[in-house]
Image (cartoon, rainbow, N blue to C red; front, top):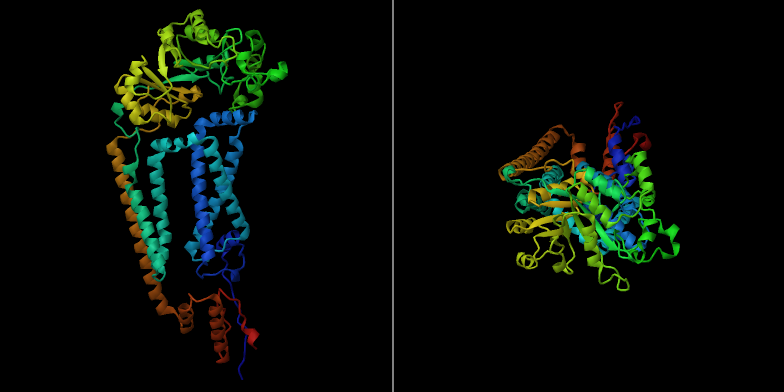
Length: 584
């Protein structure tokens, strides 16, 4: 008579694996997991996940580098909506949340592949991935429509970050070699694995040769580095005090600027004053004083009306640069009582500090009484201020013949011949218009170049290495703390870093493939020596569907019991929880 005893099954706890499969695919139970190949549908979702991650990485990098122009972005939104708000806050918040979420899912997916687990993204995550993808694509399209010129910041920033991004990308792809080696070495050779290996090697080779396409003015001999560019206070120091006010210009002078830059408009009675916007709505309390006229052109108010407006309270209420909290109580009290600044006041301040002035003029509308005399009104204010004409730089192309005594600069990138024909000896260009080659050409022809807006140390460093004469900045207090370019590397040293990183990567990738191959060979040999017949049979069908494997295991267990085998030991069948007692 055959005596049957229950076969007790003991599970090895796999908390880490349960966490991975539970979070990624809501498969918390052991029987829910599978080593089968992922379906084509799940592979497609993995591709969508990778695409979303890549797009979000690009999007996050763009906004990281666009920090130089956040104020310009908010100003563009103000001109469209008529209301001042910091539009970067919701964008940065959603980008941070979305990128963190997608990155987490990417890590989980790669862990699944490394452990040989079947990919099975939970439906809630699929909705999240699609939401992140659609939101990011919508954001890219919107920015291209509203702020399309800003895409140039990506290529310009690569002059500063390119060498470091190359090393980071090389390290990431080298580490991915572990997953590729696992797929290629441990699995049976298929067309898919051959394509995977070729794609991986192609990407790796492209990264090895990427420095040939990286160009940066900071890769130079330090002996060729020119003097530090002068910093111009763009509308003063608008992060420390309201823009275009006397306090803002005083703050800029305290930060050691070489020149003051201002936007000039002519009032109804012919007084030049400082105002960036077309209206007075954003930077004054006109909504309280003249509520019916808040949308009128600023130049259609006389100087008495303009002078009666408060030009500082908006700064404290809106906090456009998130800097109000760092101001002293004394500065806040001064800001509360600020008024609109006239051109004469600003020029007299510059003259007392022995500094220069850069003027941007806006012509009044045709119905303005000084529409034809606006230039003469401005020149008269320059003369009244007492500043030397050689210290005033004139930007408008209109009637340059009348202002021969002033310094002439062009806001348009013209040829050297055209500049000389117009009697212009300097250019004031947006940073996206001034390539390193253009700057070198202008400097070779004794043309000084001023670049705007430069608010970030990395951009200041790149332009410093390019040799620009001066930069116009909203953040003179930040650039003051940059006594030397952030990084400077000789061509020989850069080549050494490039070759060394490539050789280290090659050695690591070769080592990974050798280790994986050795590990597979050793595992197979030890398995053939230690496996019993039943284990060998189970291994042979390991790549069959789970249902077939389960059926075979049932037959093996039942056959063992029927042959009179009794055991009081604990046997492990980690993938199926069968109790021999059920066959009594």
